Image (cartoon, rainbow, N blue to C red; front, side):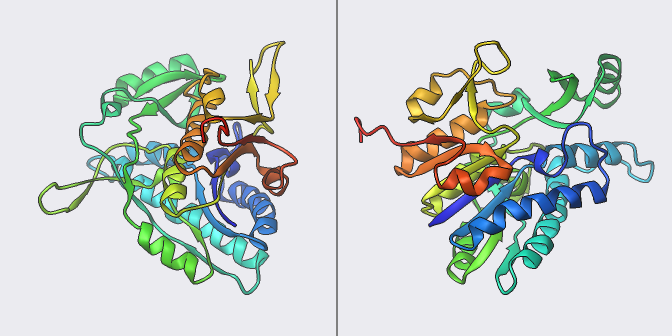
Length: 307
């Protein structure tokens, strides 16, 4: 079975943890354990988030006195793809002796007129207290929005239209390679309508939407979205909270899940199932093997009454 896995950015750096390399290496060891069991029996394409990492690099770039201007988000995104990709390649290489593993810096086409450029919603970086957030908004020109425990920077998150390297990823899969790609949703680029020349844009693409598009284009059988909770929950955080064990895309879409947390995951899973008739699931990283085998997580399946 061909599985596209979408790892949350918190798989490498959890809330409240110091952004040290050793911390991220320890977390990636956990990721490797979860994925290695699946890789023995299935073709894997692994994508990952980069919110904490790109936020850290953006802060460093904005305060570096050697720079006349901060690095743009597209280049910072490419840096996170290289760093996280290297961590994953080394750890999975050790966990899967003899298996080909490759990380690919991936570019994702977006539209220049995407309304997301006028309405930043994608969280990046750390959580700030109110006073610090206001100061950064004034001094850096950042957009800030409330998140759990404080405020975080938000940036444009346009919809992915096409992954530039899809054919290369397909060739690597055909050669038996476990492919790590689409990190942080891919480096956001626009194409010149006349020449096709690519130019980076100031944005961060949602990795779950890119994973769903990639899974569709690669004709994957299963889209596995891994996060830090074991299920999608109705009424999350309320006394009436209950896990959703099984749902159709339509049922999930009617759930009203918020953009800042479960919303993109739900919409990505629903889109993949609707467009391909395949299966998707959302659940906890440590339960990856159990989720694929139907023993954990929230399964998203086609609506058989309309198939």
